[in-house]
Image 1 (cartoon, rainbow, N blue to C red):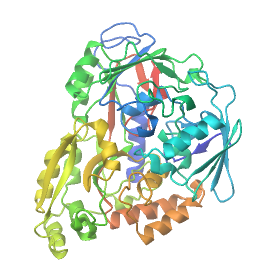
Image 2: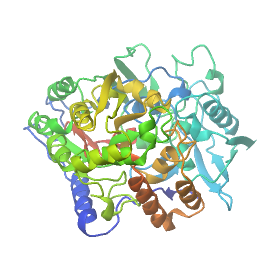
Image 3: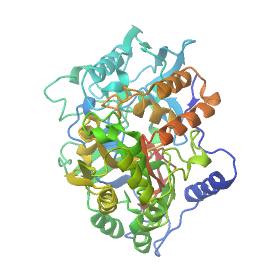
Image 4: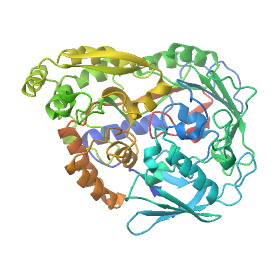
Length: 520
């Protein structure tokens, strides 16, 4: 088996689905170039060269792969140097990586992978089954934010090229885990070495140029001449500039200092007027995430009526227009129209109804509300702060905001530090979203919330072929909405502004993979 589809990128349908499908295809196929810079030139008019320079909102906190996550701009930084067992295309298809073949046993609890021959780490060590075993076990046992994705997995190197993973239960998301942080490979000699956190030793498409890299400010890479798939990465050099300020990003793009940046929805017109073109991807959902659904930290959150009331206190259409500038879709569910879990009947399940929300709070015994500390992710979710604090106050929910750098946000969230928070989370592929967010052992479920009805649906999904699982995903979506496991605002577009030298072929979430950045 060489490929496996993780999700349906588009499904023919009418109504909202068709409208969003047409919108998406237009975004991906049309490049609206602003200004008068010619094709083949950067925003500053300079000729395109072999270097890709991107602004990043945040940076990794060291190179210890056990602490890495598969989200945010730090994802670009570690994937440049660390290869993964599998990889994926921007339509969600699982592709070969360091492992060129894979197959499951009948009940999907044993996964066998065949390693690619002839690969080496940058220190000359072979990328073989034993090296992969060492990486997987170190990641599993490392207590990092994503280590739960490999909890209970037994890894065996049968021979030099054969790796066998025995799973505690069938996990349809395992292939994606091995395409992400859980499948990252590092040289065995570097694991637990004194330089593990400062000197990356991988087998990825690039190597770090230490002399030109400035910690916390700029990461500079050059092509790895021994990488097995060089054609997937057209640039000889890569520069990732840590630039959390969005205004600074736009100025850098207009002056030709960078080739691209993820910009805010409010700044799309400004980016285009500065000579950039914008490519947008509706592959995330944004809203309130309830981590403490059992009420272990805040008892009120354990009452479904409180979570339902919070769903009803937000005017989703107003958020689309006022915060997203019309670039998105209001939706009461975390699954959007391009996923198998989408149910059009659930889009407006929660109407904006302040009086009904207050009654639910009173019925639950929480008319006086409660106090909660929520993170304000600097430069990423801070546009939601005012409306979140204001609307929750209508229910006497008193919010204290805590500024958190984006690089720290996911690790702190995955430690269960915040009972509830607002965030922007990839909804693609839904097989990974469900595996990572819903089971009690899921990485994004650190307080181990569970429900018998959901457990039964997850068990049914685990043994059902993906092509036949659409109805199960819709049932999961219905459970999540009715039981208010989240309070989604909907699916905002995620825009990237680029000069004329660069285009993006697509993305599964807010941050495109490196191989999606192509030369114009």
